[in-house]
Image (cartoon, rainbow, N blue to C red; front, side, top):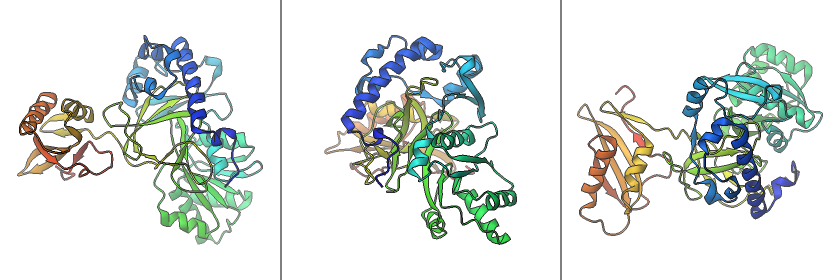
Length: 413
């Protein structure tokens, strides 16, 4: 519990913020000079002022959809990298298509920290069942493991029986991949009567890890921890042995914002994960992941002092098509912004009498002005070009799940 990767993990919060924002100011200045798209996005921004949270939160969000658009116009990375051709190690292609760079710098995606927290050490053999095909996951974990001094079996996905045969022969101590594929491998080993007891740890990602499955792995002597990452950003957060939330990586700045906006939410409130990467090669500033999570209060019992998130809690893109018109979370945010009496809101879309119906539920404290409902209905119509109803509800009535638009219509509607 006290075995840390480096001293960064136990910094006082004030020191961490000061050091991260010093790096951010340098990052933005560097990116403005070397990445044409960043220079365009942050035109007029004085990098030297980016030394506190409030300054960062004035910058625009960069969304994944914008990556696709920019990369189509300016191949291959849309002008968002600072990499010179001789510094480029790989070019990955994720669905979209979205192209991601791999730099030659060791552990470019910073996975060694998460692997270390999961118990991986120099001399371990790691069986890597993340894909090496087009997408970067396999290389991300591979680079992190090698940076720790581990040997890697680049197994990839599929061929379950061959996976079992190789693991039985090589006897790896660790596994990285999805939890469901680890279960498939272990089930196949049981079916074949093959001993895979060399495995004693795993770092998994890419899908939900049910507590019952984690417990089943533990019963077999395999301690399994999770991490959260994306192809664009690399490692975002990881579990420690305490298993109380995911600790934010030291190489990023993470915010939780209200979906459809760039406005921060209070700790504990579910919102969209926004990440600023401090990687000098790929300086994604305020990159909106589209994922939902929430900040946990306090610090981890393991002694790491960085902020923690609850982990992946769903997707923030809740766009709904109502009566032939798209309604976006950002539009609902604009409606609410025009009515200061409304503390929180959620648009509920339903199918009533074979027709789409939408109602904006608004949390309002105290006495409700008689005109408020009519005013909000009018604003909703102006912003969304659709008629909707308004329901005023007490503060605390709406669930803390990050939803701005809740589409309750049947899937086949």
